[in-house]
Each structure stands twice: as C-alpha cells, then as structure tokens.
Length: 387
Length: 136
Image 1 (cartoon, rainbow over the protein chains, first blue to last red):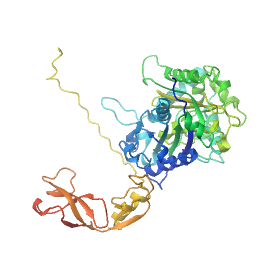
Image 2: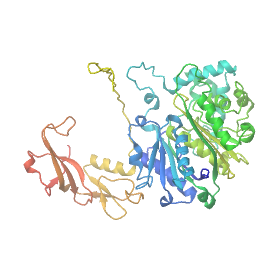
Image 3: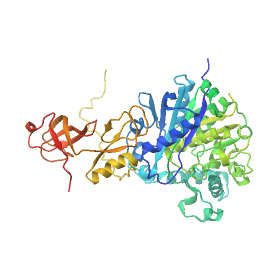
Image 4: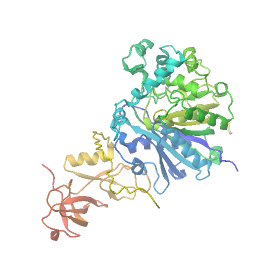
C-alpha cells in the first residue's frame, strides 16, 4: 500500500503589510486560518490536527508561541506540531502536514506559517552574539552577498540581472492584492539607482519586512474528491539540509538543493522540468537567487540561469516558465510564512484560483523554499490532476 | 566503564547577554485589558457560555469562537487560594514579605493571580475580601 494521495483543499492569506497593528499574533494567524477554512468549505470541527511554523522564537521574543495560539487555531484537544527550519520553515511545515495525511495519521490538517516582523528586527536577531565566536553582524544580506558575487564571477552574468529580477517581481506584485510592496510607479532605472546595501545587493533587490500569515487545509483523497472547489494534488515532496560551512561546499548550488530537486521531480515523474513545469514559486529574498536557483533546480544549465532572466522567460507576461507571479519574497516577507506562501501560490495556480496573476492553463507547479545559510530546502510539486 | 577523570576540569564559560526591545501588538481584547489597567478599570471577556474570564482572551478556550464582549468587573474580590513569599525574591513586586493570591473579582468567573500586600501571613485567608490598589 502506497502513501495516501494528498490534496490542498483550501488556501488563506492575510494581506502582507509592514505593520498589522490592529491584530495580535493570535488575531493574525486566525485571519489566515479562517480564510483557508472558508476556501475549503470546512469548519473547525473538520480539522484533525494543526502543523504550524515560524522563524526562530527570539525573532519576536515569544517562546513556543504555538501553545498560546492553539485556541486561535481551533486546536483545543487536538494535536499541534511546530516545525523549525529557519527561512524554509513555511515549506517544511506544509510538508510535515502533508506527511501526516500521506501516512494516514489524519484526514484533514490545517497548516500555517506566520511572522510579525513589526514586533522584532530580523537583522538584529540574525546577528546575535554566539559564545566563543566572533560576530560580524552580517545579517542575511551580508551572508549572501559574497555567494552572489561568486555566482556573478563564475557565470559571467551581466551586472543588472539582479535588478531585472527585482523589477519583474515588483511588477508581478501589482497583480496580487495580498502583496506588501505594490509600487505602481516604480521604474527599472529606480531599481538600478537604489542605494547599495551589501554590494552587489541594492536596497531595491532585497525583501521587505512584513507581518502576515498563510494557511492551507490539506486533505486525504476522499476529502479531495469531496471538495466543493478545485483542489491541488500533491505529486511530490522533498526536504534536504546540509551544514552551512564545510570544505568543498558549493555555496552557490548546494548539494542539498540539487538532491532535493532531483527527489521531488523523480516523485512527480518529471524529467524535463523546464518543459513539464508550468509555473514556479521560488524563495528569492535577494534578487540574484532567481538565476541561482533556476540552475540548481535544473531549469537551466550551470551558469546559464541569468539568460532566462534576461530573455524574459520567467515573466508572467510572455514567459515560458513564469517565476513568482505573486511578486515573491521580494514583494512580501513575513519570514515564517514566506515558504508556505510559495507552496500555497503554487497550489492556487494549478487550482486556477490565482486571480490576476494566474498563468493560463497551469497544470503543474513547483513550490520552493530555502532557509538558514542556504542549507535547508523544502519543495513540492502540485498538479491539477490526481497523481 | 573507563574514561578520563574530568572532575578537576574547569568548564569553559562565556557570558551571553541578549537585550532587545520587542514590541507587542496586543489586539482588541488584550489591548482593552491593558488600556483598562492604565485607566484603573478591570475588564474581562464574556465567553460563549456566559461566564466572564479575567484577564480576557481572544478566543473561547473550549469552542475557539471569537470573543468580543468586553465587560467591566469590580476592583474588589475574594481570595480563592494563596501563598506567602518570605523572603521576597528578585523581581518580586515588593521588597518586603507579601502574599500571592488567586483573586476572584466580583463579576468574574475565573480568578486572577496577583500580589497581596499585608503585614503577615496570619492576615491571609481563603475567603478574605480584597480590593485593588491603583498606582498613582
């Protein structure tokens, strides 16, 4: 007996904003969860368990917030499980929830990721002093910029490819009512002329700090068949991780990334991802990670990913492999939710429910998340057809 | 089992001081309670079954329904249970011996843990009537 077929029955998102001053953390997660339940046509009593993820506790200084959030998530007397995998946590959380369905532990699971960055400072949190270590207060941008420079050097990519990605994702965000950054008058020149934060990463090429939550209701095959709305079927799931520092590590295309992609595509029966995947929601918090992951995931040959950006292949309008039609992490970054948003947006695309950023005829989509020092990876392939 | 004797080894030690001003968005229910404290008013929340919880919570702890009916309760109440703190500990509300008590405020159905300032444990008792003293 194989694993249980799993379907995404419902998706719920809050609007992503720099500050959601009107709601507590509980109110924030409640909003996304209620919308996911409504989308699925279900009630609290239909849910068997909750799987929740967010960035490390010290980001907002609430230890084990899942305990306090159980009431808000209709979870009294039911199992609740917290997942911790840094920035990839939203993706990993969805995959843990999926595994509970696949393993026939539960029939319907609510899974949710959230962050309230307005109550914290992520760059500070990422620069905590460590005993017996020297702190260079690099933050995420300081950590990733040398990796990006390494990619630029080895691929020979033109200098403005990152700006092209940033401009594209901000254009895409204009079609997503939930997106945080909706810069109607932004020009490519403004992206290029923005201040340099961590050379070669400009201010315009980084993600914002957002408050927000994203939830999904997952169900077994019978629940998927009974759903009043179109569902997304899970075709493959994979997680991989590796240390962020060891001799010989390929930091631009970590082995864990390549192994994770190979596994998820094998499960989904995909041999030519560029041709067989219709749309990608990829974790791109700094613009250059789009070409970097295009290569690592097998959509482009090594050192050629930037050409897809330059040719417009990843654009919603006219591209053959649209990437981050929602605007991506570059337009909304509630950290603990950011991975789940990628997974949820992939599901919305194959359910034909992505609204103004829908890719016409999308049947198969990849959701992707990474975290830590590009060392934790989570991916799923979802499709309109039952696998 | 054999092994090295490490009983005389001095363990490595390092200080790790984490200081950071987090911000809290309290939302409409907890926010109402905190605003009440500022104005010397105690409020609770009416649950689905009609009982009143103090301090208030946003969601019913049994049914998970949203709770929105904020109700004022009295500044007087009855001690349900108590303990005596002597000597006071760092972070205690007072630097003299004092009580900690579960106080059922008049109008509330759940008791609130709070410090009680009396001269000795002999003065504390279950059933004792107490009154909130507000900071000037």
